[in-house]
Image (cartoon, rainbow, N blue to C red):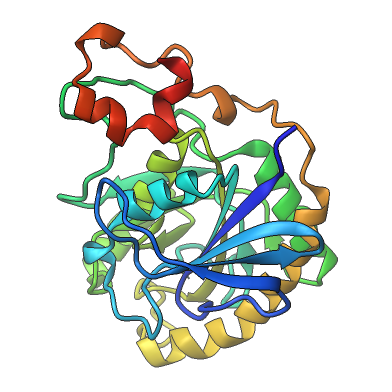
Length: 286
């Protein structure tokens, strides 16, 4: 049985993972270019970890400029089977307070122009994305959050906007009318690409503010976001340390076989370069 490998993509406030043993830095180029930064690999509670700062060291890359395909393909090339995405979000519900942890189970995509699939250049694939996060991983993360004392919301709808600007008040109120729970800028197309790569994906989101819909709260500012994230990142690291110990030896969720019936193009019709580029993902089906 292959070794379990967990990927962690750190968002605002989470730029490194303390406590890793056997640490090394891995720089690689994917068929889609370079990831946000070098990957940091090591061991945490005996589990192999692959860490990537989503925005690069020093927070250099804005959401619209992230090379999501390179980030996820890099994880796949390094053998990652599980990805935990850590993110800062705005709360769209009175009941979700700044500092609360949310494990979203649904997404609404309001981004524009972001490459959101590995499948082009002569190959067509239609994955199921009705349930966009791994239920196994989500449950483990929620349990771990509660164990470290966080106030955890075990499900919710995450609306992903383009950014880098925060919402207007009119937009914020519109999104609330749709029933969304939290708002962010990065977890799509991350979740889509992870599913295409047959990697289990789930998000640990920390509410840092009430966006701008809340008339009695201050309008969102990046300073306040980062202040709360500095506190929340400690909770995230503790929860991840606990969560990795509870991952199953064998994946039996739909994430692990997402491509089994999803590849539409005949094998002989897929261009050789496309086959080579996608080998880490579709090689076992060819």
